[in-house]
Amino acid sequence: MSLDLLTYLFIGGSFALYIGIAIWARAGSTKEFYVAGGGVHPIANGMATAADWMSAASFISLAGIISFVGRDGSAYLMGWTGGYVMLAMLLAPYLRKFGKFTVPDFVGDRYYSSTARMIAVLCTIVISFTYVAGQMRGVGIVFSRYLHVDVNTGVLLGMAIVFFYAVLGGMKGITYTQVAQYCVLILAFTVPAFFLSAQITGHFLPQIGLGATLGTGQSVLATLDSLSVELGFKAYTDGSKSTIDMVFFTVALMAGTAGLPHVIVRFFTVPRVKDARTSAGWALIFIAILYTSIPGVAGFGRVNLINTINGADNAGTTYTEMPSWFKNWETSGLIGWYDHNGDGKVQYAAGDAFEGSKPNFTDGAGEFGQRMVSNPKMEPAAVNGAPFANEVYVDRDIMVLANPEIANLPAWVIALVAAGAVAAALSTAAGLLLVISTAIAHDMMKKTINPNITDKQELLYARLAAIVAICIAGYFGINPPGFVAQVVALAFGLACASVFPVLLMGIFSKRMNTEGAVTGMLMGLVSTMAYIIYFKFMGGSPDDYFFGISPEGFGTVGMILNFASAFLVSSMTPAPSAEIQAIVENIRIPRGAGEAHAH
Image (cartoon, rainbow, N blue to C red):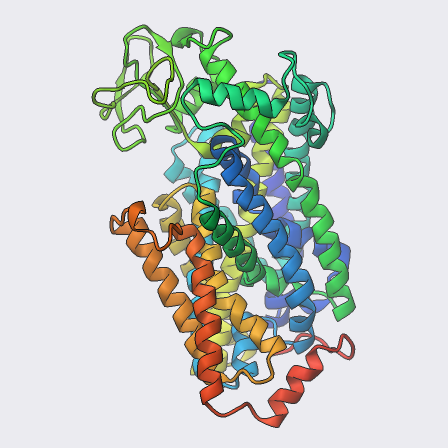
């Protein structure tokens, strides 16, 4: 059976499963739309949480970015994993006991302020849109390769699928769909990881294989170091980020994870606080299965990529002899080649092969059948001691998807990876879109603008908001400001600077009042957004970074500003009422929580 047919069967079968679940679990009330009725089993919620949390960034892009940047990429692993532990230990049980199922709802009631609620709505929407852009881009990349369409068409297809089950099923449909998506994505990631590890190192488990010795007599990491240096890159185990930037970036990812609204809401779908803790533990186990495999997949993929392109003699491979995966991804526009030295060989090394780093393809084909480009590098030269100038562009986001093909794994494994990548991207996109629609319909319309709307009208507003959100998300998916994982990192920075501090202070500081919380949120959100916009969109130079801190790590600075301004303003304004302080005292006691309520 051909790869295309297998891919259609795997992806089509998984879509049929998701849509069938969405129809079976169709939401009939706002409680089912927002929190799946509040009766999800902890293990099922743990699987849904893991699928919600392990987005396209985790499945598609994380191994790719580690594969290309080496040590610096470890910040994503440490930050996201550590952040989930913070969320499970510091926030989730207390928020669940408070009983409000959205972040703006908690902020509005805890700080007894509609203004605070609306600012939290703004923070939630900005964070969720930034995050969902990366997910939609991931969907587009998968569809472009396996359905032979361009990335933008792939994004439109993903929008159509998400529209169906997110708008129809709400949280109830999304929860049970995410359980199925977790099963698909974890199989899709671990099965090729086992194959790759056994093929390259002789060890079945990638967690062990990464430390194995290869036929060269060197370990995998030592081999990567020598290959990288020989081609002009930094050693794989060295980094280019400064220590302070690494620390701030990791903290931003960590606190940002703990403040992500689409993950927090999952702890309201279980019946009791005890179940929230239990499901958090199950989710951590399910997440660890994938995350502990990522370093191995990244390292094995890098070795395979370099050896396949440059050949055994490290001198390049003629284009006509390149394997089919190279040309397939070139057709998708995610690999580009320009023969700078005219020898007909594809040669990969450090440095840009194209002006502006990415290739601009034309409609023409070269003498070997390669896609022609309009922006080859002017005056290309070998850099950092590399044996030749780089001629290749490889999009980082294709590494996990291309790994099975590069390693010549069976066709069914390649098709399984395609289905898993789609599942990862769709599961998180659906959760984020639901958060956006909830923030607009529940927190903005019901709680602030028009409290007299009926349950049915609120549900209609939620579905309309989801439709608009899908359209906007699709636009950002087609026009993303970077690679998937980097776009997602910006969302974590914003969550770190705005949502995480206000939640933490709301739980652990009885003295924190409305004025302090509002000031802190605005300070964190505005300072971080301004920094990101200046350096990402207005041409800011890395030489002008504040103490060398990149935009991805500036969320930590925003968080510090948030805490400092909030406590300063709070100390100068009246304390909360005795009733609010008693509520804060009570939510720290892990007993006596009722169901999630807000309507």
